[in-house]
Image (cartoon, rainbow, N blue to C red; front, side, top):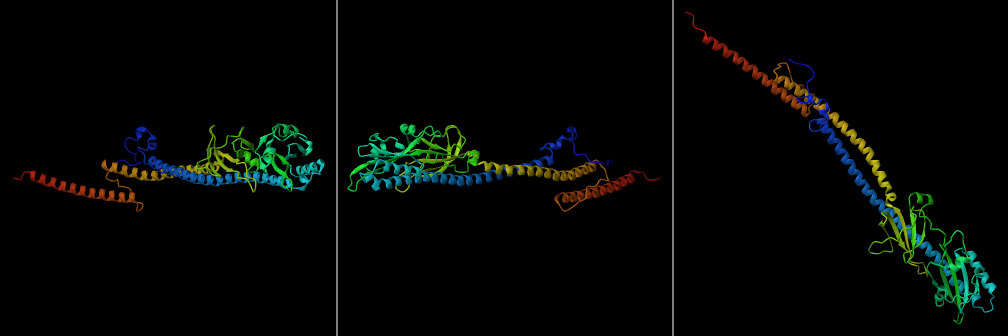
Length: 412
């Protein structure tokens, strides 16, 4: 009779202890793999669902925010130009221009006062009906001819605003070290007598950009950190202004807007150099009596920065999820180890019974679980088998005794 630690089964010893790591042969390995793998799949599913939901929400919220910022910036420029546009029209109707006896100095003083009150003005002047500049700020262009200038030609019939353009002659006269390549916006309005006679044109050149910089849609430091940039394009989609806070060395071309065309909106923009942006845009539509220049304002942020919270959220889910998956695998391993320990004890007992050990019994039930029920059933079966074996042995002994009695010869 052999008593002691039961063996784990035939064939296991030949591989040492490594067989327990083989899912094909080890219930512990299979259980750990199943529980850990299921937990990992569940974690990945939660990461994907949470990331998709937050990504969609961020795209909607940030897109609407960028769109609003683009619209507000365009409205700001339109409002500023509208104020100067109305101002020129109002000044053009003052009696000072209609009175023949008004001196040049008085007219120039009015223009200088207007220029000092609004720093957007780079130059103001009045040209008579023949196009000769009669009075101008800082005497610039006085006595010269403006008859071929757009502001004079277009302003003879009605108030007009011209788009951003270069004016080298004026740039030389108003040289600004901070802006080596200045550009200007033309404003002009006709001046007429009380009887309707054309007397000349009051013109102005606004220095562009009006505020010398594009306001960042956020504070400058966060805007540069998050690569959030603003670009203003003309109606011909030429770059008029760029915030410089977006991280690119040169502003990108105007975005190709999705169909159908809208005045404002947001979308995911793919650029030719491979950078993908979340872009909000708006067209300037003018303000009040100012018709606007149909500018396009784009607020951009690389999707890697815009959707960085999605990656942070997924990492926040993935790390503890993987840790819990590992714990689940370990828990599954130990649970299966307890189960397999009882199974190995049952197997060892069965092998000893098969080898003829009459004292071996199966382990008693510990609870009402399936393993305990199986142990109870197997124990009852073994007990009945032994009773039947004992009865058979007794019957065999009785039969042998009878045979022996029959084979003995009778006494003479």
